[in-house]
Length: 114
Image (cartoon, rainbow, N blue to C red; front, side, top):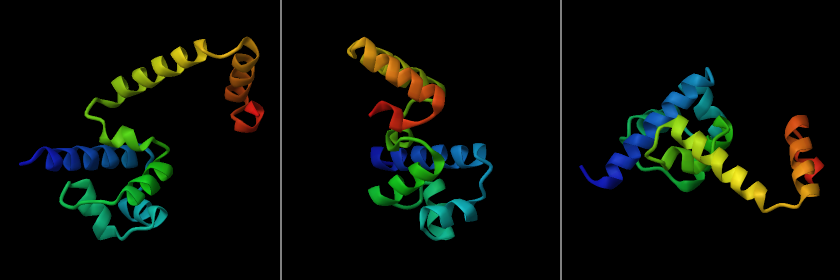
C-alpha cells in the first residue's frame, strides 16, 4: 500500500467520522456535496481518488478545513494546533484589531471585522 493510499483511507475515515458527528447520512452528505452516494461510499472507505473540488465541497458541508481531512493527526490535536496558531497570529494584531476580532467571535459575524 502506497503512502497516497494510506492518506486516502485516512481522509475517508475522517470524513466518515465527521459526517457521523454531524448526524448526516451518506445520502445527505453526498447530495449536499454534489456527488453520488457511490462516490462518497468509496471515498469514505479509501477506495477511490477524489478531486480537490469534491474535498472542498465536503469540507464546507462538514464545516472543516480541507487540511483537517488530509492531516494525519487526531482531531483533538488538530484543534489544539489551530487554536495555538490563531493565538499566535492574534499577538501580531493591534489592540483595536484584537477587539474587533473578539467582538466578531462573540457575535459570530465576520462583518464585524471589516
